[in-house]
Amino acid sequence: MNSSPPEDGRLSPGLYIVATPIGNLSDLSPRAASILAQADAIAVEDSRVTAKLLSHIGTRRPMVPYHDHNADRVRPGLVARLGSEAIALVSDAGTPLISDPGFKLVRDARAAGHAVVTIPGPCAAIAALTLAGLPTDRFLFLGFLPSKAKAKADAIAEIKGVRATLILYESGPRLSATLTALAEGLGDREAAVAREISKRFEECLTDSLSALAERYADAPPKGEIVIVVGPPGEAPAPSAADADTLLIEALKRLPAAKAAHEVAKATGLNKRDLYARALEMKE
Image (cartoon, rainbow, N blue to C red; front, side, top):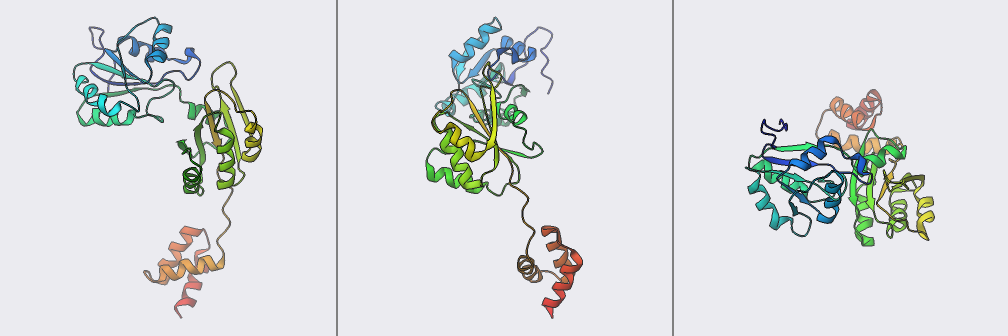
């Protein structure tokens, strides 16, 4: 979708998803500043926060509160306006839709046939990933874990086997407890805690989960915090018993050659050896 303004200088009607700084106001892109200055209205989490950003770029625009507590009530009105107005969507910091209700507005805007344009920029999760020095080829963003211990442990158990770097948001008072829960549920993996990204006191500390939990136990940090957890180590090779179990199941559905091929693909074991074993089983 072409988001260039028409010849009269006004933005075309539609929804503009605008990433805003996560700390340093200089990180606001010129394109983002231009969109915010021209929008007919801006959907915001907190008008006080966005007002400071608008003041920084020397403009004032009408703002519509749009957050977890009023989104369902406000969304239909915003969607109705998109046919004739350019509405910008911002969060208090970073890229909208990351741990906020914005995706429902995008979904409904698309369903109504309105234009949706993204203006990319800062994102705390991605910024922390670049600082952590952990694998970046596969990663999973988890947002905030549940606050209650049982629910948190259950959520961690669900992702224990995911072979990817994990990214989480957390608050200072809960940081040590969450790091401890991660160490208990995932094993004592390599991890990083990034905070105050792009601000004066930006820091990113790397260590094991348990060591980081101990570090912050008596001194909860201030500011916005991102936890990055390394992926699990290499999985142990399947045992002969594991291979036999898989072969028995596969032979119920497939001839020996295809069963061996399926198990080899799943385990990385030698297909010829598996085929020989499958023949022994059939006999």
